[in-house]
Length: 190
Length: 190
DNA sequence: CACCACGGAGAACGTACGTTCTCCACCTGT
DNA sequence: ACAGGTGGAGAACGTACGTTCTCCGTGGTG
Image (tube, rainbow over all chains, first blue to last red; front, side):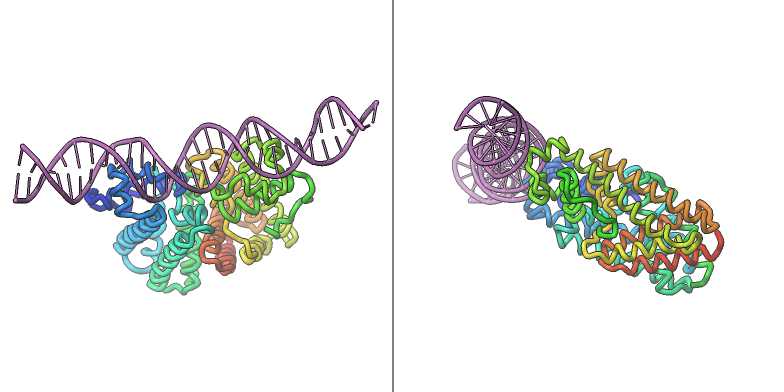
């Protein structure tokens, strides 16, 4: 996700996390072996296991860092717009730009949840926390636009639906449909 | 998914598909081995491979049957309501009932796409087809309620968002939020 | 120059799983 | 009763992968 920006590619830990993010997000958690991450990060297997003592730990670190970066990128973008309805709509503009990135493959948390949520409690919790944090941010935006908690819930559904639909269809258009729906819902002053 | 109903549990093929659906949907595609399906279906491994010559074939059969049943169940429910806005809202009532089933775990297609969509073209195509068919059905409902294609797109986002949010949060409420948003969007006569 | 601790490359180990093979019990037809 | 074949149980095989271990080169220190 270029939108989110990259940290210094210097420290071994950062290189491992960069490689893990690209591979896990692009191909799925179980489809990527530790050896692929070793090869992509240029770190030795011994070092890799010193930093992340198991694949589970690495997966959770990947999700945690992605959550932070994803929300920081969104908030940096939207908070630059004037508070109110315009800032709410900025969320969908940001989504639209994200969907157009060539390696966009949907929500990392929804994908991870679908793959391992039933088996791996840490992954399920990461997805739950991510969605809850996203909803909290939207609730703040909705309040700033004179909307209620109900509006926040509806914006969350539109955003989530747009992400999933864009992923499966391969089109960025769902962001525009969601934006239009959000504008209509705010027009009512709900 | 009880909402969807079960076929006769008699033929070996039916028993295998029933077992595959319960296990694949509940735990994920890669987390379930062929041996678990053999054990759950009571069919021998030899028979299993006679009916479905590989796991890939079985996965695609599972997705295909689930697509048919899921949409048939939804349509049976919604088409019993009078055409117009009420029938559109029935979709969200049906979702609400689905979300409350104890083994609800989100959209089988979104989950499968997140897990194997990047690797397995058949899975990606199944997810794409399922979403396209669902959107076509919603477009028919939207038209019957005097709505446009744009309304259909927005209803799709609300439904998809509700499914994903309900799965991760473990709550059925997203169906109600989506229903309220759909009503608001139809109120505008868009 | 000799010693030693560290880190890297990749072999090794155990396990899980998709797929195939072997062997045996049972059922059929005469 | 008996020959033949059908199908089931589960062993066997190959592969992939998470994790650990071995061995070697290197770089710093007396």
